[in-house]
Length: 533
Image (cartoon, rainbow, N blue to C red; front, side, top):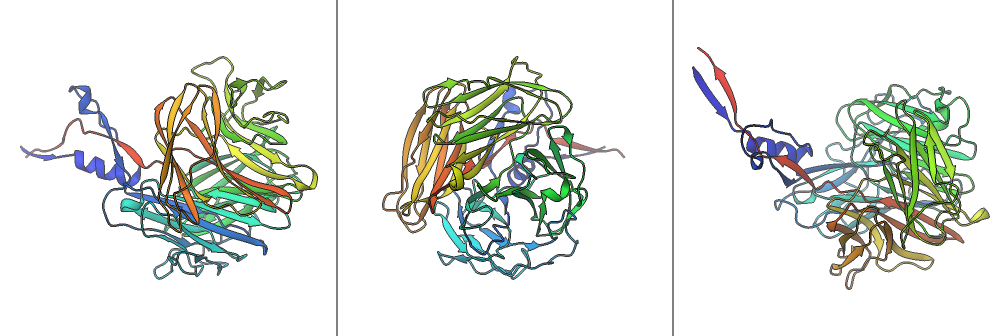
């Protein structure tokens, strides 16, 4: 009998660090330390940014940043233009890479990027955004109506915590206002409560494929009575060609207009990035980011204190009904919204409720929890549509349920010197369960400066509105990193505001953990391959 021993420890670490997937060793007879997980930095990160806008009066800025401290000395972080496929009719892509080529690209204000050629991430295409130094943001901008979606990867020291923000100002027309999107990692399943196919709204789901093989995607819509009947277009079997983006107009997927819908995007094959751009004829618009994975409880951080209206949209996947307690974690503690203390959500159906006077002049975070605190409570996804302003001067943004910040998260495109009519970025830091302590760090600016940090203490059941520090001597835009130091779970978001012809334009981005590390268990034993002769 010949016996060959293959050590697993190094292989598991390498695989998990690259893919972000922890491989769990089988439990053995040894002590607990033999299988204890170590946290290793990720070695490769993929992000996609949706097509910014098709408006002729839109201006877009992309900002990329990676915190210092990643492994190794060599690496890169680049975003390249993706091709645009399909016509938004709900029929999906044609399967031909490079259809409807975009020529917009972007021009890097820091001299680190070129113009996109619309051919996706092919050999020879110049990056739109390219980072050169961890710890320093880089920016690129465009005013082209044909600006493409972007796909790209970061590796080496640029991979852990690589963050990209896409911010678009639309000065007129449907959706006028400030549209902000945190470029996201591709996946196979996404939930979007808060979308609409009603008259006056144009909501597109943008499906972007960063890989070299086609993805096939299904898009399902659920209203107050359950799954919506198909309209002129079909949400089934949408082909997203390699390194391409497909916009799908949601109103083509329902037989009749529906005011509040939950959208479920699933990839049958491959993986995609997915975000919804909501444009209202009268009340502006913004991007709807995917909600956190369905959980029995949901936290929606960062409802502004001057919100003129708040609409909560909740969906319970599956057939089980969910009974929820509704609380607002404000600056002075948790309160119960008058008349909306509880909410009943029927399984497989979308429930919407208006919480018009929710904040009462105090910024806060909405907390939804099972009414009976059962460990087997149904899971939910949720989002709020927040409106600021009144009459013809309204603007809207969306806040989905967000995952907790367990270690670190970063937001970028914070102005060091806000323009007239703009306000500095604000953070909403919420500790809905027990008190916590976090460190908030401002990076150097894209035009220079030095980092600055401060420590913030959060009381239990509260949300603190925090004006983050600015870099010392900084110019341009900068990144803000929040690290949880101690205490209970922390939920966070960032609000950018910019007055636009009397309209209080704003956008809110959630700050879930950046996934810069992955838990890698130590191998409990070697794999033995036995060859009997």
